Length: 183
Image 1 (tube, rainbow, N blue to C red):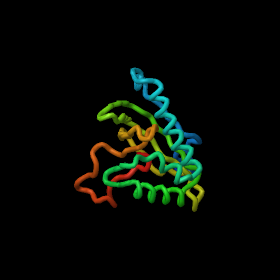
Image 2 (image 1 turned 45 degrees about the horizontal axis):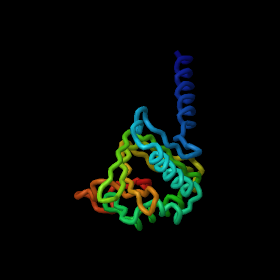
Image 3 (image 1 turned 135 degrees about the horizontal axis):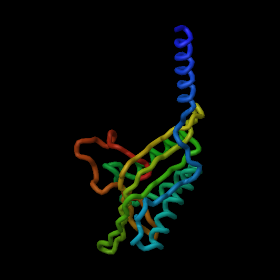
Image 4 (image 1 turned 30 degrees about the vertical axis):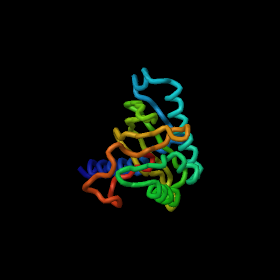
């Protein structure tokens, strides 16, 4: 009977040690993937432009180059009421507290529209923003999202984040609005 109790304690301790070693994923490069069938009927050069835009943003993130990263945000950026100045402040905080930052994106839907001479893209995406805490050196998932819609606009010859389609959430103040800095 005592032997069984000791064995249970050893198994619990071993399980705890294994769980402590589990860490969130920290991709080493931006990953942009398309779910099967997504974009099959899309203009391939335009898709390559979108991927290039995400890669350029990722390069700026990896270098913590805030000015370069902000060029990826449209002039009229609006994400649930947050403007460019708000997203700049969010990225300043991210760069202050984390290093080795990277992101991953899986595009599950892709829609392009042209209205009033303006080209827009709506990209449904699941992904994450990963990094290492400056203070502890531990890997962490900074942000994650599921089926969020990247709303992009072709501005000054390049794709830029415009924000979300619906504007501000009426019941949420800008300080409490959900924010994903990569939107």
